[in-house]
Image (cartoon, rainbow over all chains, first blue to last red; front, side, top):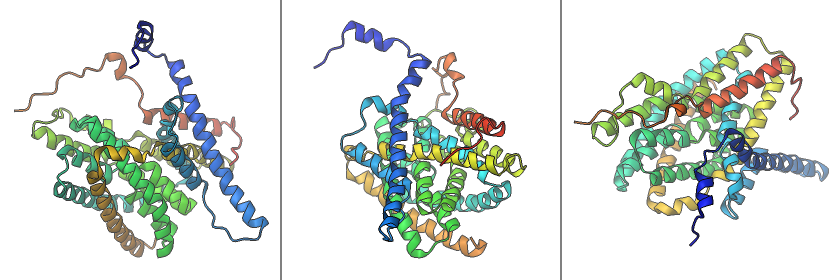
Length: 364
Length: 45
């Protein structure tokens, strides 16, 4: 056993200063950039090879390459400690990327697509929570783990689970499992959804709506959309952001439920609770979209902002693969994973039905 | 009856820390400003 020397203890107890924290992020951010860029090179390389040899090779988006490279590293050699803090910034790049993506949306489109999304999100929330609760009880999972899986599968995977964990005072172990399960199931979805979408001949808008509704992790929803097409990626991000905006209401409902049973703190100020949980990047997205609608950006500037958003997403997608560790799932056994998978499958089918209906009504 | 929540144990200096969301919005705002001011004229992809 390794014992800490007094110096080591002293070193650890010293508060970490901001420059040190920033420097500590650089190796991981560098790794995200390398993996993301390798994905881009792989996409371009395959295309160039097909062209040079006159072969019709399928166009595999850089998104998929970056995720696969990340998955291979995370699940074989693992991510060395020096890179972990920086890799965890993938969610930061995702949010910055979404805000910048606002430049490619006119507010009118946001209102139209957001309105359709919100109506479908309402149905999806009820269905996902009901299915996860019924299945969780049938498989006798721990009640708070059911709550976390329900929050994660109905809204937005990781951040919802973290928000929910604090509010309902769930165990770290349950939260770690719920996050691993949501990410792993999302990773399967990434590969399966575009294939199903193409088989059903879904339009870009319909597919984006479906990915945004059915994939739980925001980064994976954006990736699933982007794998299908650029336009589908845009719609998937918008739909998923609408879903994320409901996070406060669902977490509040669960917090009130567990508080009423004496197993969580009471919520003193509900309006403040809702504001604290509200994803602020959604507001940033709306502001940039408003500026684009007002004509503040010319064509070149819109293109620059769109490309900055693409670079931010490139870092995000590399992080998705690196953060998905299937080995985490073994720790709680197969049962909770089966419940999660069954619930996700049900939500997938229900949301596909919803999107097919909406596509017919709104001519998407 | 459920007891009222105890005061937050968070030290005052931590209460004003910016969240991940806010940092992301700030970065996007700075980049947008740089693009508008043409300090970043074009971004390759």
